[in-house]
Length: 252
Ligand code: ADP
Ligand code: MG
Image 1 (cartoon, protein in one colour):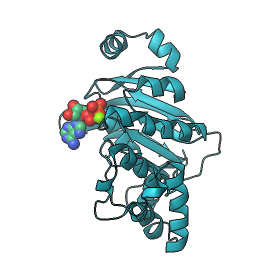
Image 2 (cartoon, rainbow, N blue to C red; image 1 turned 30 degrees about the vertical axis):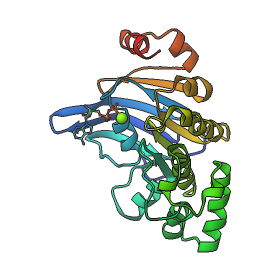
Image 3 (cartoon, helix red, strand yellow; image 1 turned 90 degrees about the vertical axis):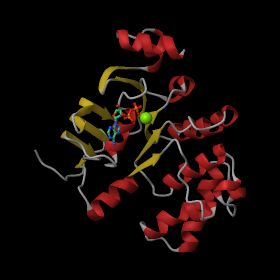
Image 4 (cartoon, rainbow, N blue to C red; image 1 turned 180 degrees about the vertical axis):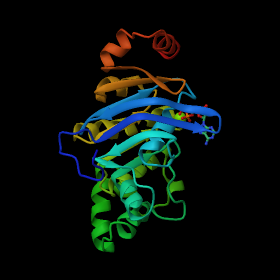
């Protein structure tokens, strides 16, 4: 098998094969096989502790894996150095906690990566950042600091900041679970727009409305395994496994 060759555009953007992740004696991921096609939106759901965050974190190598292979855009995940930095630009991640830099303005939060990592000039990075902030509806907040924004606004800034790195793939790990209910939809709407524009996305969420609207496939995890994969309508109306039925009976 050849490695480090750019895949043709028909090949999946993410290919996970036989992925195992152990934390000491505890196995958090068990034999995960998952492809994510270019432009595909995959929603990952499952009970707390089932390995959803760990799965996301392995894709941008925030977690190393114990066994198996993960390829992104035809390349095995790099170990370190410039290649790892490039992977982190290619694979954006938005977390439950917005993780903005508190001491930087909204604008500086978004331009930091493009200036440092992509090597853009300040003016160029700022023009691009303003376009992205406008797209997520917070351009008028550009000179403020994160604490002056609502949670929903901060999360939209976090999305803009990831997009500023021109990612090929976006990972979202429960992006709305820390938000007050009235702010959830403004973030989900931004994500739906991103999906409609063709961004490849892996989204861990309990927001079934989002899954129904935007997901091409739902991946249901339990105990570190992928138990069921289905189109959303099918998954929500006719889950096949007992564990999925049980989970859905508790959340729906
Ligand atoms: P989920 O996101 O589905 O709630 P996680 O991926 O966060 O689940 O965690 C899966 C399992 O792995 C949990 O049992 C969790 O306690 C364990 N785990 C996650 N991260 C670590 C870690 N750094 N060290 C030890 N155990 C961990
Ligand atoms: Mg989690």
